[in-house]
Amino acid sequence: MSLTPEQRRRFVRHLLLPEIGPHGQARLLEARFAVRSAVRGSAGEVTALYLARAGLNAAPETDGASTVELDETDDPIDAALVGAWAAVEHVKRVLELGRSVPVPPNVDERSTGESG
Image (tube, rainbow, N blue to C red; front, side):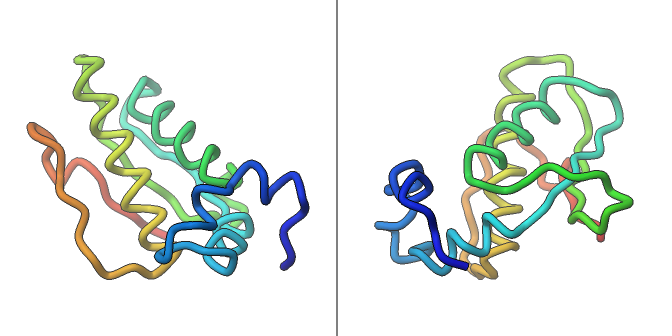
């Protein structure tokens, strides 16, 4: 997949990162995701926002999309941390990056998982 000039402008920072580059960004643009959470809320919305900003496409789980599962929290700060961390972990899986990303304080790794 070749990136359009508009995609090159939009994702210029990703293209400059050795971990992503043009081939990784093309993989992200081809990837689809679905967010499943215990309660519709802010952690799921944050995750979906970050994944869309990275170039991934939202799709129904039934469409073969990779699923990001989240436990919800009432605390908006925790929700933002859980959502951002889940998005980073999902991008790493799409790009098959093995390095660990530090978990933000007060975020339990068990609060996110993947199926599909």
